[in-house]
Length: 255
Image (cartoon, rainbow, N blue to C red; front, side, top):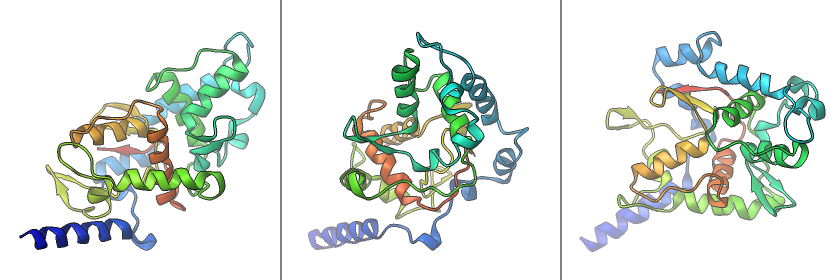
C-alpha cells in the first residue's frame, strides 16, 4: 500500500510539473454556460461595464494634494493604457519585486497625486483597475518572465504546486490535473486569469484576482494571503505567465 501511495504521489507531481499544453489552454469563458457567455459578450448586459464606466470617470477626476488626475499624466487612456494590463505584474525597481496593477494604481495615487491609496476591493480601486485593463481587451497576455522577474516567477510556480490547507491540495491538482471535471456540480476551469477584475455571479460584484485566490485558499481550508503581500503577487505573476499569449477579456463574467 505504501508503494502504491508513493507511486500515486509521484504521478500527481509529474502531471503537475507538466501542466497544460499551450494548444489545450482554454479560458474560463469556455467553461461557462451560454447565458453567462452571452452576458460577457454584450457590453450593454455585462455588469462589469458599470465599474469600467466608473473608472473612466475616476480617470479624469483630480485628486489629492497635487490636484492631479490620471489623465493629467497619461492623457487618453485608450492610447496610453493599451497593452499595460497585459504586462502586469511588473517588476518595480524601487521595491525590488513585482507589483500588480492595483498596486501600481495606488502607487501613482500616493506618489503623483499625493492622495490616500484606495482600499483593496473598494469600488474605486476595482473600477479604475477595470477601466485600465479594459483598454487591453483582446490583446495577448505578455507578462515579462525573464530578467529580474525570473526568481519571482519561480517562486510563484512553487506556490502554485505546493499542497496547502487541511485538504492538502495545490492549485495545480485542480487546475492542471483535473480541469473539465466537476467539483460540487461546478466545472473545474484551468484557472487562467484572463478577465480580471472579473464579475462573478456568485459575488454579485466585480472582484480582483487576489480575492479569487483567497477564496480558493479558504476552500482548501488554508490560511488565505493578506491582500497585496508579495506571495500573492508572485502567484499572480505565475498565473499570468502560465496564460501567456491568451487574450485579455476584462471585464469577464463567470458563474
